[in-house]
Length: 80
Image (cartoon, rainbow, N blue to C red; front, top):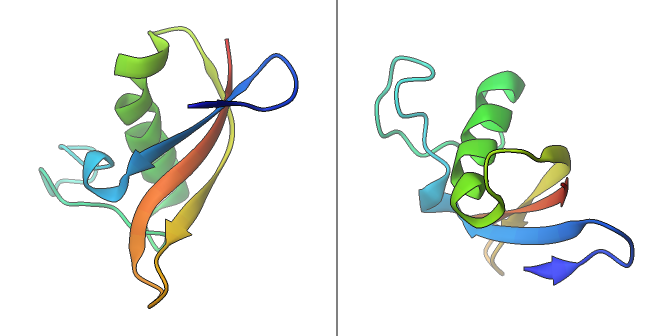
């Protein structure tokens, strides 16, 4: 968790934490950048709730990849 230079936060979550969990009919499936945008956004918000609480706005998100180009997490910009 980092500050964004303003009132928001930048939070990085592991890719394994962003799962479909019934959102797209594939319980437990880890979502990647090719997933449906609405499903992906819901899964990222759910992964952030333990850190931020229930009330927050997900401004944007982007994938975090390792040197080989494999997805290792998601960076999310949030505001309370």
